[in-house]
Image (cartoon, rainbow, N blue to C red; front, side):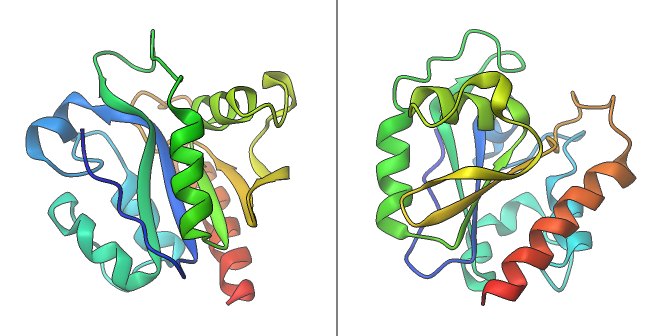
Length: 171
């Protein structure tokens, strides 16, 4: 389990499903060799330089936070995860009150929506959602995971840039 990187005043909190085994082993978010999180974050405009997993705590200085819905380690890609703690994660997000919550992948966005009773699974698609978490607006991104190889990188980046543009106009 990795600690939440949250504090009041953030522009965006990225929320994944669960920490992958590679990230748990290294003790830093998005450490898997096939995960494009750090590259997408930088190329979308959230960070002025390309950061690496060991720089995850410095994201707070860029107005970005990190958390996961499931506070355990995912043994496989989102299979059999226990989302019963979602309301607790949502409470931490509400307390931090970021402008945006960005779910890193449809799996995370759909799990949050259904667990919190905000939308049905099939109603959640990529992009801004008609529901929020507390005062925070919600955006669902295509997953940065290497397991999401079916979507071209350029298409993923388009969605990440859209979020950046919306978050930038809010601040």
